[in-house]
Length: 183
Image (cartoon, rainbow, N blue to C red):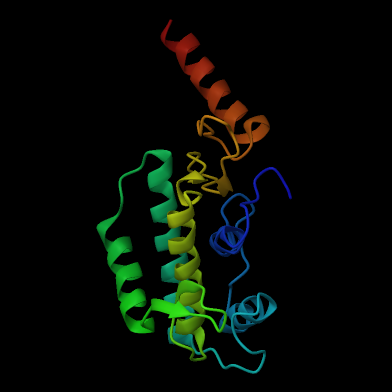
């Protein structure tokens, strides 16, 4: 596991949000085909599942809404529109308490196929992480040109930057130059 990786099922959520990389200006979900490939690779849909433009746009909205939700762990205010996006998806996918054959319970979407159900499975992992106490450690780097999502492994949950050597040092350098300019 890398330093930024999240434990267990939460890693899938972190990977999904980070399919958009602001630093490199790349997007792993650049098209409906890219979304289908990503979801299939993570076994959230079958390889033959079709993904139309509407489902692709929904996935991009959900990804950014999850980024906004994770950003609240870094001190940002929640965007009410992002909360509404996630709530609408959760209502549409019918996420509910479910039971496995062995009697253990979990929260998950109805057993259907398609992109909305796959996104519902991602939301269910957020819920599971919240109940486990790991969700608040998923944070967003405060550097506006980064916004990378990382898991805060620090003992006191005080991690701020995705990587101190990059984003943290750039911010400290800017702050130092600003202090020298005003002095």
